[in-house]
Image 1: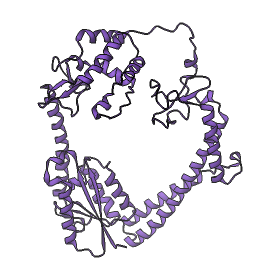
Image 2: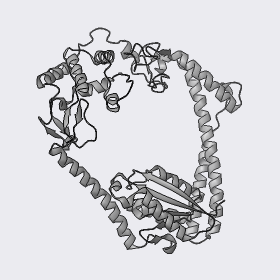
Image 3: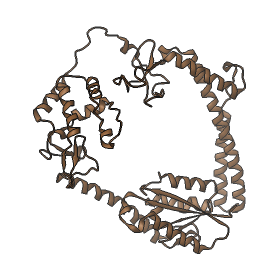
Image 4: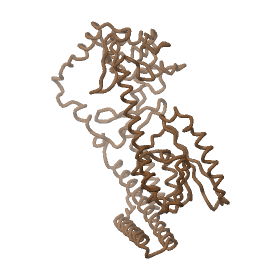
Length: 452
């Protein structure tokens, strides 16, 4: 087992790809060369890479994994190319370098900044390094603002700022929007059907019958498209002014609209007719003022959104009836689909779940019946955890004030950490046990009318 663990941390954001010196391979070579020059005997080298993540925050998977190893005391040294690779936020990065790493006896090295925490007694190198942190942070914020401003100026000139193109169009060699005829025919069909006052479900059925690929399937050139359209996709196409040749970019206060920017797929008169049809109000229901949907539609159940179709992997929705059933609505227009009209009674599903949960509760609690289980009180656990947290704070204060040395602090803290972890496990185990029992009792005692 290695006596000394060195962690290389490498980060490359999307903006850094324009600079060859910032590439992952160059950072790796620089760090390997510097670590080899340290000549640390019996050492182990770990590598953590965040590719495509900003340095303005620490919500990055690799850096979180690295910090977790630091908390566990499994890392002795961290090496980065420069401070900006570790983080561009001066406050957060300084907190880790000045507070967290010295507390866990972790050495921090920034190669390009010629910084080694062993030479600065846990500090960040004075005002010079502080200004570097601020410069990195300001550079990142300024670059982000410049990118937004550049995109807005391109949009005002009518240049396409998105990588992909609107369904029904494609980009030519000059990156100009031209009509993509196969997809444009689908768009024209959608508008024609809506002008005929067809509902979104009827339009989706017609598109499925004519085997029209969805925008995603058309973009990916799927070999065997499902041709199952969602209502939201159709509604978005019907409301999009770009199909009459108007270029739209930006959001709200920065919204840019340029008429006659590209060839129109839909005539202005047809678009206006469709908008009039969409704006028509449905006939109010004069009968059944308190109908089935009004009575059962707003009742939320514990299984709503959690039942997944095994064929198409879409959520099965419960019906708004007295005896609800979970059905697969995604393939309701696909008569040849394996899960077409597939449904299961909510009562049957509850019975199966209760049986499974009862068996699990009996095994965990060692009881012959779920009702015989006694839920352990969790208040004692909470008090113990609160006591240990207070003891750790007092221990740290004694260490800072010099009342105890580093070895005494490390030994006492390890003991408190073990005790804290044990009580946390007891609490989590008790909470899971309580949830299983309460859920099992609720599913058995509540009728479907009360759940859905």
